[in-house]
Length: 277
Image 1 (cartoon, rainbow, N blue to C red):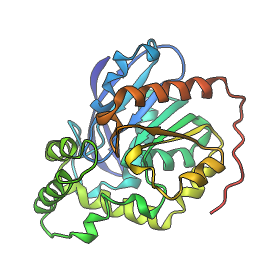
Image 2: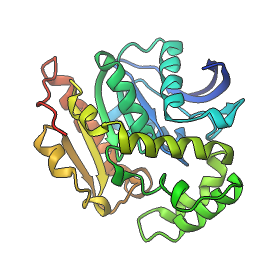
Image 3: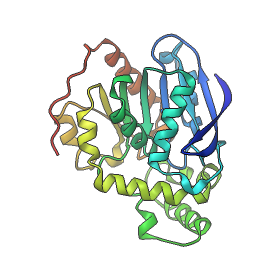
Image 4: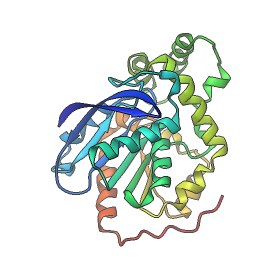
């Protein structure tokens, strides 16, 4: 695994992305992290023998982790999608296995919807598919504050007190992993897309293997039976909430590896069942 940086211009905005990657054989795995997380969520792929020799690539989104963005207020989900497209082009990645968590799952969904032919499989780790998924992002409207630094500190306090697995661990590190000025654009666009962009229909219509991963504490998501009925593989991670990479990483990696083995041997093209609202 190596660390490196990529300078890019996205919609006229300069960014410098902090990346980790490994060369190998086969279709590379591209990881997109969630809000308040970083590329290091996936660095332990190098410790997992099931992925020995597999190439992968991950990076900190603009305004997150060690990446830099010249205009933080320009960052939104559409901006992150264009960033991902530019990154893949820069790296010469023509075909990939996509893995995205939360914000990264939503970014990955829109990317896959725009370019389904280049995606070999999609592992969606609690990425937004419906309005009910905005339990973090909708706080920008439910607990508004004009000062982005104050909003972020209040967000940290609320989520530190959550009874879900890994919430205190997640919350206490948020201030070090995302710039406050980037939060509003990210959260507002996540809510807008979740409420109005027919994300579920987009996900179900993807002509490729799809797995939706969720923690057992979120097994009450109302759309899980609908996903299963429409041919999506479900992966419930025990002893976990929204952050399986923190609460139960071994099970998360085991399920991703098994899914990739299935996707690699599946007949192509992958025929999805007809999408319904």
